[in-house]
Length: 483
Ligand code: ATP
Ligand code: MG
Image (cartoon, rainbow, N blue to C red):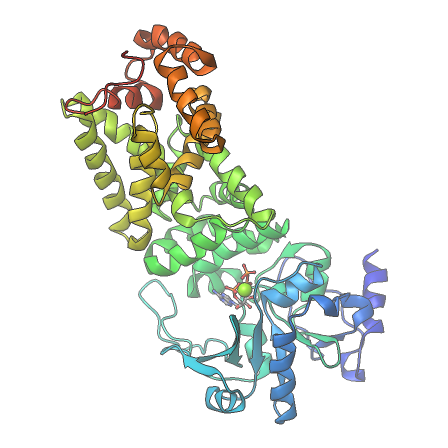
């Protein structure tokens, strides 16, 4: 099978210098001594219809101006896997200034390493100048993490400084050729994440690569090559020195990859979750919340794979919900009233997370609203449910409630009632409210059963806590079922 594949690879070669790849030594990233492979369409199998026309425009314009230009990175990898890439990056030998002069709407961004954003309507193609690999004397922190990598280089240098062999492929849409310096084509075929160069050195230079190995393997359904994987356990603590904002970006990508559940399980298996982000320590160590978190992640994964929108704040609200519940219970046990107790619980949980910038502050307001809506969704009499329907974050709060129902932490009849209430016309909405006060209908029957059970449930789980909320002192509306 492998021999046949090599024969195919050779079928795509262009020059004698690229002939006869030697069998790679097992387990390590290997650079091709004889220059890069030039892989033709019959081997790489890229469907030109999946290539964004704007990316083609960019490479064509650069090439017509006498420059080298290729689509590069994750986009080529995804194209070779038959997946439509979500964004396209272009690499070129033109300097940022040269690139920006060639396009009407182009903006040079970045201080440390300058890139060009070329814009077409809402679409942006990121164009970077070939960058050099780390020189031996690159400036590092005390742990060996490289602090600057802003030197331009050759195309070959650019391939070598990339993280994984499958991310170091260059596609020229004009000739439909993939240039492969590090046997990435072969690794795509065998579904292997293999770091370029010495794993220990590359992970030390940039520990985020460990997280990327796990994320990309989870997303693509690849295995991490054993030699790449080996040093991760030992080097995992280096993650703690990475700036939190950068970690957050990678984590967000992981959580919104459509494969979050698989990725998080793999992170745990690699020992990478500890100390990585406060959030992850929490997620895995809350036994009560495990079912809830699993449900939340798989439903988010499903939505993403179906192309539906998802919000990071909703996801983070799910991941931390049981921490909030725990703190809420503790505050109430100290004698605080439920509403201030909840508010304080949110503060303490969020503070622990945002202190290290793990969760960006812009998400925090949304998360608070989603949590704060939970006890309010328990109140269904009078004007209360109508006011809730008008709430800006109602939909998120309601979806969150449905997840809680599914996880068995609050009565399914509450979620059902809201589903019917949302869909009902004015008359039916009134009937639904009457159903509650008159003690008829399935919701009321279930509620009665639940009330009988309450002594045994007191103090555990969300349902108990939230029922109490309905009886907040000073609340203008009587708790439901009080009539
Ligand atoms: P995704 O599909 O999830 O975006 P990606 O591989 O495209 O995955 P990006 O963060 O968009 O990830 O990075 C684009 C490319 O830049 C990568 O394919 C890789 O070649 C290079 N790259 C990204 N991060 C690193 C890193 N930490 N070290 C070396 N190269 C990197
Ligand atoms: Mg990408």
